[in-house]
Amino acid sequence: MEDQVLHQTDTAPRDATPQDSVEQISPSVGHPGATTFPTLLQNLRNARGWSKADLAKRAAFDPSTITRLEQGSRAPERETVTQLADAMALPMTDRDRLLAASGYRSDTWDDPDLIEIATLLADPSLPPAVRREIRTMLRVAASHGKLHRMYPHQTPADT
Image (cartoon, rainbow, N blue to C red):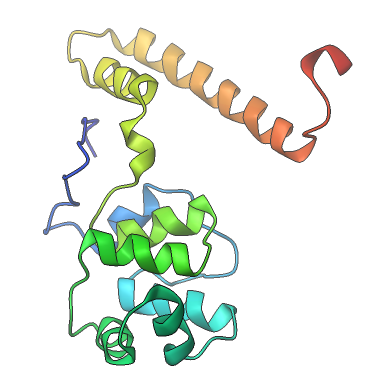
């Protein structure tokens, strides 16, 4: 897939399969195979032990709305997806997966640093060797962040 810069109102291309759009976001443990919005929504709701009525009440929707969303007979608006994610207090990874499964991208991509990196990597004049170096540095930075998440009370000076 080509590198490209997306904006808040952009959606995943309609010719992309749901699996394509979900794979761009780190999958969350516990929901294997949940790639379509209806399936993912139902799995996330069931993981909490909630009925459709429970989710509807917490998200301020009519229970029939949840039924239609889980049956796939109604395509969700972005605001609907974020309202559902908020009601379930989803961690960012699950929130992003739910957005991607419904054809929307994460708010994460509005970060100016990420936009700058994406723009740089999408620049066709950038030599491939430089592109590889940047990607290597990004992997190192991501690993550093993951370690900090695992050991939040240690600062770099502590190690």
